[in-house]
Image (cartoon, rainbow, N blue to C red; front, top):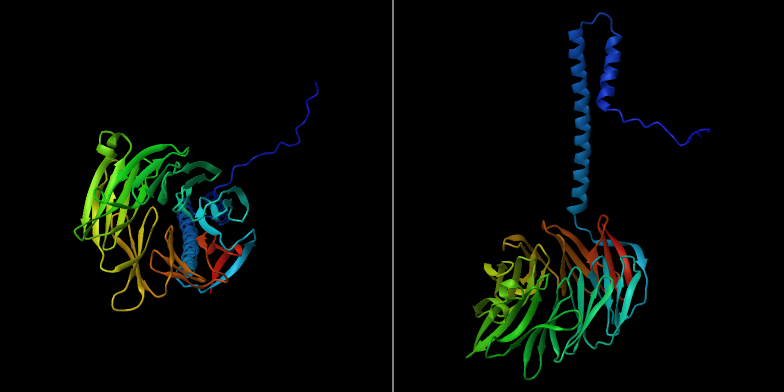
Length: 418
Protein backbone atom coordinates (compact mmCIF):
# COMPACT_ATOMS: atom_id res chain seq x y z
CA UNK A 1 0.00 0.00 0.00
CA UNK A 2 1.31 3.38 -0.93
CA UNK A 3 1.95 5.56 2.13
CA UNK A 4 0.75 9.13 1.67
CA UNK A 5 3.05 11.91 2.63
CA UNK A 6 1.72 14.31 5.27
CA UNK A 7 2.49 17.77 3.95
CA UNK A 8 1.40 19.36 7.25
CA UNK A 9 4.29 17.96 9.26
CA UNK A 10 6.89 20.42 10.44
CA UNK A 11 9.86 20.37 12.76
CA UNK A 12 9.36 21.96 16.16
CA UNK A 13 12.47 23.43 17.70
CA UNK A 14 12.80 24.38 21.32
CA UNK A 15 13.54 28.07 21.89
CA UNK A 16 17.20 28.79 22.40
CA UNK A 17 18.45 29.97 25.76
CA UNK A 18 19.60 33.60 25.27
CA UNK A 19 22.48 32.97 27.69
CA UNK A 20 23.81 30.22 25.41
CA UNK A 21 23.70 32.62 22.47
CA UNK A 22 25.71 35.20 24.42
CA UNK A 23 28.31 32.59 25.35
CA UNK A 24 28.60 31.41 21.72
CA UNK A 25 29.17 34.99 20.53
CA UNK A 26 31.86 35.57 23.12
CA UNK A 27 33.56 32.25 22.30
CA UNK A 28 33.62 33.15 18.60
CA UNK A 29 35.34 36.43 19.43
CA UNK A 30 37.86 34.80 21.74
CA UNK A 31 38.63 31.94 19.36
CA UNK A 32 39.61 34.50 16.74
CA UNK A 33 42.37 35.78 19.04
CA UNK A 34 45.55 33.68 18.64
CA UNK A 35 47.56 32.39 21.52
CA UNK A 36 45.29 33.35 24.40
CA UNK A 37 45.66 30.88 27.32
CA UNK A 38 42.62 28.87 28.36
CA UNK A 39 42.47 30.46 31.82
CA UNK A 40 42.39 33.96 30.33
CA UNK A 41 39.73 32.83 27.90
CA UNK A 42 37.48 31.69 30.73
CA UNK A 43 38.08 34.87 32.74
CA UNK A 44 37.27 37.03 29.74
CA UNK A 45 34.21 34.90 29.09
CA UNK A 46 32.83 35.48 32.60
CA UNK A 47 33.67 39.19 32.48
CA UNK A 48 31.78 39.77 29.24
CA UNK A 49 28.87 37.60 30.38
CA UNK A 50 28.45 39.64 33.58
CA UNK A 51 28.68 42.87 31.60
CA UNK A 52 25.86 41.86 29.27
CA UNK A 53 23.74 40.60 32.15
CA UNK A 54 24.23 43.93 33.93
CA UNK A 55 23.02 45.78 30.84
CA UNK A 56 19.93 43.56 30.74
CA UNK A 57 19.17 44.26 34.42
CA UNK A 58 19.56 48.00 33.89
CA UNK A 59 17.13 47.80 30.97
CA UNK A 60 14.58 45.91 33.07
CA UNK A 61 14.93 48.47 35.88
CA UNK A 62 14.34 51.34 33.44
CA UNK A 63 11.20 49.68 32.07
CA UNK A 64 9.90 49.10 35.62
CA UNK A 65 10.64 52.71 36.60
CA UNK A 66 8.76 53.98 33.55
CA UNK A 67 5.81 51.75 34.47
CA UNK A 68 5.74 53.12 38.03
CA UNK A 69 5.96 56.68 36.72
CA UNK A 70 3.02 56.12 34.36
CA UNK A 71 1.00 54.57 37.21
CA UNK A 72 1.70 57.57 39.46
CA UNK A 73 0.83 60.04 36.71
CA UNK A 74 -2.51 58.29 36.17
CA UNK A 75 -3.47 57.72 39.79
CA UNK A 76 -2.02 60.68 41.72
CA UNK A 77 -3.76 63.52 39.93
CA UNK A 78 -7.26 64.95 39.91
CA UNK A 79 -9.24 64.80 36.67
CA UNK A 80 -11.86 67.45 36.01
CA UNK A 81 -13.47 66.41 32.71
CA UNK A 82 -14.84 63.31 31.01
CA UNK A 83 -14.70 62.06 27.45
CA UNK A 84 -17.52 59.85 26.17
CA UNK A 85 -16.12 56.64 24.66
CA UNK A 86 -19.40 54.91 23.78
CA UNK A 87 -23.11 55.64 24.01
CA UNK A 88 -25.73 52.92 24.36
CA UNK A 89 -29.19 54.32 23.75
CA UNK A 90 -32.20 52.26 24.82
CA UNK A 91 -35.76 52.84 25.90
CA UNK A 92 -35.75 55.43 28.63
CA UNK A 93 -38.31 57.02 30.92
CA UNK A 94 -38.15 59.69 33.57
CA UNK A 95 -39.16 57.26 36.33
CA UNK A 96 -36.48 54.64 35.57
CA UNK A 97 -33.99 53.79 38.31
CA UNK A 98 -30.64 52.06 37.82
CA UNK A 99 -28.43 50.01 40.13
CA UNK A 100 -25.22 48.09 39.49
CA UNK A 101 -25.80 44.34 39.73
CA UNK A 102 -23.47 41.40 39.03
CA UNK A 103 -21.70 42.17 35.72
CA UNK A 104 -24.37 44.57 34.50
CA UNK A 105 -27.14 46.94 35.53
CA UNK A 106 -30.72 46.55 36.76
CA UNK A 107 -33.17 49.09 35.34
CA UNK A 108 -36.40 49.20 37.34
CA UNK A 109 -39.54 51.31 37.64
CA UNK A 110 -43.17 50.98 38.73
CA UNK A 111 -43.96 48.90 35.65
CA UNK A 112 -41.12 46.38 35.54
CA UNK A 113 -37.44 45.52 35.69
CA UNK A 114 -34.78 44.54 33.15
CA UNK A 115 -31.17 43.40 33.29
CA UNK A 116 -28.71 45.19 30.99
CA UNK A 117 -25.16 44.29 30.01
CA UNK A 118 -22.36 46.86 30.22
CA UNK A 119 -23.02 47.65 26.56
CA UNK A 120 -26.72 48.37 27.17
CA UNK A 121 -27.98 45.08 25.74
CA UNK A 122 -31.13 43.81 27.46
CA UNK A 123 -30.65 40.25 28.73
CA UNK A 124 -34.14 39.82 30.21
CA UNK A 125 -37.11 41.83 31.44
CA UNK A 126 -39.99 41.23 33.81
CA UNK A 127 -43.16 43.29 34.01
CA UNK A 128 -45.00 43.99 37.27
CA UNK A 129 -47.11 46.67 38.92
CA UNK A 130 -45.44 48.16 42.00
CA UNK A 131 -46.49 51.58 43.27
CA UNK A 132 -43.36 52.43 45.27
CA UNK A 133 -40.44 50.15 44.32
CA UNK A 134 -37.45 49.76 46.63
CA UNK A 135 -34.56 47.37 46.04
CA UNK A 136 -31.97 45.43 48.01
CA UNK A 137 -29.10 43.70 46.22
CA UNK A 138 -26.26 41.30 46.89
CA UNK A 139 -23.68 40.00 44.46
CA UNK A 140 -26.00 37.26 43.18
CA UNK A 141 -29.58 38.25 44.14
CA UNK A 142 -31.87 41.27 44.09
CA UNK A 143 -35.21 41.82 45.81
CA UNK A 144 -37.67 44.45 44.55
CA UNK A 145 -40.41 45.28 47.05
CA UNK A 146 -43.44 47.54 47.09
CA UNK A 147 -42.86 49.85 50.05
CA UNK A 148 -46.06 49.99 52.11
CA UNK A 149 -47.46 47.40 49.72
CA UNK A 150 -47.54 43.61 49.81
CA UNK A 151 -45.35 42.28 46.97
CA UNK A 152 -41.69 41.20 46.80
CA UNK A 153 -40.00 39.79 43.69
CA UNK A 154 -36.62 38.04 43.82
CA UNK A 155 -34.25 38.08 40.84
CA UNK A 156 -30.88 36.62 39.96
CA UNK A 157 -28.64 37.10 36.94
CA UNK A 158 -30.79 34.80 34.78
CA UNK A 159 -34.14 36.36 35.74
CA UNK A 160 -37.07 35.93 38.14
CA UNK A 161 -36.50 33.40 40.93
CA UNK A 162 -39.58 33.83 43.09
CA UNK A 163 -42.43 35.99 44.36
CA UNK A 164 -43.62 36.75 47.87
CA UNK A 165 -46.99 38.17 48.88
CA UNK A 166 -47.21 39.53 52.42
CA UNK A 167 -50.26 39.94 54.64
CA UNK A 168 -49.05 43.27 56.08
CA UNK A 169 -47.46 46.39 54.53
CA UNK A 170 -43.72 46.13 53.79
CA UNK A 171 -41.36 48.57 55.54
CA UNK A 172 -37.86 47.13 54.86
CA UNK A 173 -36.39 44.15 52.98
CA UNK A 174 -33.08 42.30 52.89
CA UNK A 175 -32.07 39.48 50.53
CA UNK A 176 -29.39 36.79 50.83
CA UNK A 177 -27.20 35.42 48.05
CA UNK A 178 -29.53 32.40 47.67
CA UNK A 179 -32.62 34.60 47.42
CA UNK A 180 -34.00 34.19 50.95
CA UNK A 181 -35.83 37.39 51.90
CA UNK A 182 -36.30 38.99 55.29
CA UNK A 183 -38.88 41.76 55.67
CA UNK A 184 -40.07 44.15 58.34
CA UNK A 185 -43.87 44.31 58.14
CA UNK A 186 -45.93 46.93 59.93
CA UNK A 187 -49.57 47.77 60.34
CA UNK A 188 -51.44 50.08 62.69
CA UNK A 189 -51.78 47.32 65.27
CA UNK A 190 -48.86 44.91 64.77
CA UNK A 191 -45.22 44.55 63.67
CA UNK A 192 -43.44 41.45 62.39
CA UNK A 193 -40.06 40.37 61.04
CA UNK A 194 -40.53 37.45 58.63
CA UNK A 195 -38.16 35.37 56.49
CA UNK A 196 -39.40 33.83 53.22
CA UNK A 197 -37.92 31.39 50.73
CA UNK A 198 -38.08 32.12 46.99
CA UNK A 199 -41.40 30.25 46.74
CA UNK A 200 -42.99 32.62 49.25
CA UNK A 201 -43.09 30.12 52.12
CA UNK A 202 -42.55 31.52 55.62
CA UNK A 203 -39.32 30.20 57.15
CA UNK A 204 -39.25 32.24 60.37
CA UNK A 205 -41.72 34.70 61.89
CA UNK A 206 -41.04 37.08 64.78
CA UNK A 207 -43.76 39.20 66.30
CA UNK A 208 -42.50 42.37 67.94
CA UNK A 209 -44.02 45.00 70.22
CA UNK A 210 -43.02 48.39 71.55
CA UNK A 211 -43.20 47.08 75.11
CA UNK A 212 -41.17 43.98 74.25
CA UNK A 213 -38.13 44.07 71.98
CA UNK A 214 -39.07 47.48 70.59
CA UNK A 215 -39.76 49.06 67.21
CA UNK A 216 -37.92 47.25 64.35
CA UNK A 217 -35.80 49.79 62.43
CA UNK A 218 -33.60 47.72 60.11
CA UNK A 219 -33.00 44.11 59.10
CA UNK A 220 -30.09 42.35 57.38
CA UNK A 221 -29.35 38.79 56.28
CA UNK A 222 -26.01 37.03 56.02
CA UNK A 223 -24.92 35.82 52.58
CA UNK A 224 -26.08 32.24 53.24
CA UNK A 225 -29.38 33.39 54.79
CA UNK A 226 -28.66 31.56 58.04
CA UNK A 227 -28.08 34.62 60.24
CA UNK A 228 -30.42 37.59 60.64
CA UNK A 229 -29.58 40.91 62.27
CA UNK A 230 -32.40 43.16 63.49
CA UNK A 231 -32.08 46.66 64.95
CA UNK A 232 -34.79 47.84 67.35
CA UNK A 233 -35.63 51.17 68.93
CA UNK A 234 -36.92 50.87 72.49
CA UNK A 235 -38.36 53.75 74.50
CA UNK A 236 -39.42 53.92 78.13
CA UNK A 237 -40.16 56.90 80.36
CA UNK A 238 -38.67 59.29 77.80
CA UNK A 239 -35.43 57.32 77.50
CA UNK A 240 -34.28 55.73 74.24
CA UNK A 241 -32.30 52.57 73.76
CA UNK A 242 -30.96 50.93 70.63
CA UNK A 243 -31.18 47.15 70.64
CA UNK A 244 -29.20 44.80 68.42
CA UNK A 245 -30.38 41.19 68.05
CA UNK A 246 -28.95 38.27 66.06
CA UNK A 247 -30.96 35.18 65.10
CA UNK A 248 -29.31 31.98 63.89
CA UNK A 249 -31.52 29.60 61.90
CA UNK A 250 -28.88 26.85 61.85
CA UNK A 251 -27.61 24.45 64.51
CA UNK A 252 -26.31 27.20 66.80
CA UNK A 253 -29.78 28.67 67.23
CA UNK A 254 -32.10 25.67 66.99
CA UNK A 255 -32.32 25.26 70.79
CA UNK A 256 -32.55 29.00 71.50
CA UNK A 257 -35.82 30.87 72.08
CA UNK A 258 -36.86 32.38 68.73
CA UNK A 259 -33.40 31.32 67.42
CA UNK A 260 -31.93 34.36 69.20
CA UNK A 261 -28.19 33.91 69.86
CA UNK A 262 -27.06 37.48 70.66
CA UNK A 263 -28.72 40.49 72.26
CA UNK A 264 -27.11 43.82 73.14
CA UNK A 265 -28.63 47.11 74.34
CA UNK A 266 -27.14 50.57 73.73
CA UNK A 267 -28.50 53.32 75.98
CA UNK A 268 -29.08 56.78 74.50
CA UNK A 269 -28.28 55.50 71.00
CA UNK A 270 -30.59 55.11 68.01
CA UNK A 271 -29.30 52.18 65.96
CA UNK A 272 -30.41 52.94 62.40
CA UNK A 273 -28.39 50.91 59.87
CA UNK A 274 -27.08 47.35 60.00
CA UNK A 275 -25.35 45.03 57.53
CA UNK A 276 -23.12 41.99 57.03
CA UNK A 277 -19.68 42.48 55.45
CA UNK A 278 -18.82 38.79 55.21
CA UNK A 279 -19.85 35.55 56.90
CA UNK A 280 -17.86 36.46 60.02
CA UNK A 281 -18.23 40.25 60.24
CA UNK A 282 -21.24 42.54 60.64
CA UNK A 283 -21.80 46.09 61.80
CA UNK A 284 -24.44 48.48 63.08
CA UNK A 285 -24.38 52.26 62.87
CA UNK A 286 -26.18 54.49 65.35
CA UNK A 287 -26.60 58.23 65.65
CA UNK A 288 -23.57 58.48 67.95
CA UNK A 289 -21.76 55.15 67.76
CA UNK A 290 -20.67 52.33 65.48
CA UNK A 291 -20.23 48.71 66.55
CA UNK A 292 -18.54 45.83 64.73
CA UNK A 293 -19.43 42.23 65.55
CA UNK A 294 -17.48 39.08 64.71
CA UNK A 295 -18.55 35.45 64.83
CA UNK A 296 -20.14 33.22 62.24
CA UNK A 297 -22.57 31.39 64.56
CA UNK A 298 -22.81 33.55 67.68
CA UNK A 299 -21.74 37.14 66.92
CA UNK A 300 -20.02 39.10 69.67
CA UNK A 301 -19.11 42.77 69.85
CA UNK A 302 -15.48 43.24 68.82
CA UNK A 303 -15.29 47.03 68.51
CA UNK A 304 -17.36 50.00 69.64
CA UNK A 305 -16.50 53.45 68.28
CA UNK A 306 -18.07 56.63 69.63
CA UNK A 307 -18.73 59.21 66.92
CA UNK A 308 -17.45 62.75 67.46
CA UNK A 309 -19.41 64.20 64.52
CA UNK A 310 -22.92 63.97 63.11
CA UNK A 311 -23.32 61.18 60.54
CA UNK A 312 -24.76 62.24 57.18
CA UNK A 313 -24.30 59.04 55.12
CA UNK A 314 -23.38 55.39 55.67
CA UNK A 315 -22.07 53.01 52.99
CA UNK A 316 -20.00 49.85 52.89
CA UNK A 317 -18.63 46.94 50.90
CA UNK A 318 -16.97 43.68 51.89
CA UNK A 319 -13.76 45.47 52.98
CA UNK A 320 -14.66 48.89 54.37
CA UNK A 321 -17.28 50.85 56.29
CA UNK A 322 -17.67 54.40 55.01
CA UNK A 323 -19.13 57.45 56.73
CA UNK A 324 -19.76 61.01 55.62
CA UNK A 325 -19.51 63.20 58.73
CA UNK A 326 -20.52 66.85 59.12
CA UNK A 327 -17.69 69.13 60.23
CA UNK A 328 -18.19 71.04 63.46
CA UNK A 329 -17.55 74.76 63.58
CA UNK A 330 -16.76 74.98 59.86
CA UNK A 331 -18.28 74.13 56.52
CA UNK A 332 -17.72 70.91 54.63
CA UNK A 333 -17.61 67.24 55.48
CA UNK A 334 -15.21 64.46 56.39
CA UNK A 335 -14.99 61.23 54.42
CA UNK A 336 -13.91 58.47 56.78
CA UNK A 337 -13.23 54.82 55.99
CA UNK A 338 -12.84 52.04 58.57
CA UNK A 339 -11.58 48.53 57.90
CA UNK A 340 -13.24 45.46 59.40
CA UNK A 341 -11.25 45.76 62.64
CA UNK A 342 -12.43 49.34 63.22
CA UNK A 343 -9.17 51.02 62.19
CA UNK A 344 -9.43 54.32 60.30
CA UNK A 345 -7.79 53.83 56.89
CA UNK A 346 -8.89 57.13 55.34
CA UNK A 347 -9.87 60.54 56.69
CA UNK A 348 -10.37 63.27 54.10
CA UNK A 349 -12.18 66.59 54.26
CA UNK A 350 -14.12 67.87 51.26
CA UNK A 351 -16.75 70.40 50.27
CA UNK A 352 -19.97 69.90 48.35
CA UNK A 353 -23.23 68.09 49.08
CA UNK A 354 -23.72 64.62 47.61
CA UNK A 355 -26.88 62.63 48.27
CA UNK A 356 -25.47 59.43 46.75
CA UNK A 357 -22.31 57.73 48.02
CA UNK A 358 -21.01 54.24 47.21
CA UNK A 359 -17.90 52.10 47.54
CA UNK A 360 -16.50 50.31 44.48
CA UNK A 361 -13.44 48.31 45.55
CA UNK A 362 -11.01 51.02 46.76
CA UNK A 363 -12.93 53.96 45.28
CA UNK A 364 -15.49 56.16 47.02
CA UNK A 365 -17.88 57.60 44.42
CA UNK A 366 -20.12 60.52 45.40
CA UNK A 367 -22.66 62.13 43.10
CA UNK A 368 -25.66 64.42 43.10
CA UNK A 369 -27.35 65.72 39.96
CA UNK A 370 -24.60 66.31 37.40
CA UNK A 371 -21.84 66.76 39.99
CA UNK A 372 -19.48 63.90 40.84
CA UNK A 373 -16.44 63.37 43.05
CA UNK A 374 -14.26 60.26 43.32
CA UNK A 375 -11.75 59.56 46.10
CA UNK A 376 -9.26 56.70 46.23
CA UNK A 377 -8.54 54.84 49.46
CA UNK A 378 -5.10 56.48 49.58
CA UNK A 379 -6.78 59.89 49.89
CA UNK A 380 -6.22 61.10 46.33
CA UNK A 381 -9.21 62.87 44.82
CA UNK A 382 -9.32 61.16 41.45
CA UNK A 383 -12.14 63.21 39.96
CA UNK A 384 -14.08 66.37 40.69
CA UNK A 385 -16.32 67.66 37.94
CA UNK A 386 -19.66 67.56 36.17
CA UNK A 387 -21.37 65.25 33.70
CA UNK A 388 -23.65 66.27 30.84
CA UNK A 389 -26.75 64.70 32.44
CA UNK A 390 -28.07 63.96 35.92
CA UNK A 391 -26.31 60.85 37.20
CA UNK A 392 -28.51 57.94 38.26
CA UNK A 393 -25.74 55.35 38.63
CA UNK A 394 -21.98 55.23 38.04
CA UNK A 395 -19.35 52.52 38.52
CA UNK A 396 -15.82 51.71 37.24
CA UNK A 397 -15.20 49.17 34.47
CA UNK A 398 -12.12 47.60 32.92
CA UNK A 399 -9.63 49.99 31.37
CA UNK A 400 -7.72 53.02 32.63
CA UNK A 401 -10.03 55.62 34.22
CA UNK A 402 -13.14 54.17 32.54
CA UNK A 403 -16.64 54.22 34.03
CA UNK A 404 -20.22 53.39 33.11
CA UNK A 405 -22.63 56.28 33.72
CA UNK A 406 -26.42 55.93 33.58
CA UNK A 407 -28.89 58.77 33.23
CA UNK A 408 -32.37 59.41 31.86
CA UNK A 409 -30.75 59.50 28.39
CA UNK A 410 -29.36 55.97 28.67
CA UNK A 411 -25.94 54.41 29.25
CA UNK A 412 -22.53 55.90 28.45
CA UNK A 413 -18.98 54.66 28.84
CA UNK A 414 -16.72 57.55 29.81
CA UNK A 415 -13.03 58.16 30.45
CA UNK A 416 -11.69 60.67 32.98
CA UNK A 417 -9.48 63.32 31.34
CA UNK A 418 -7.74 66.56 32.34
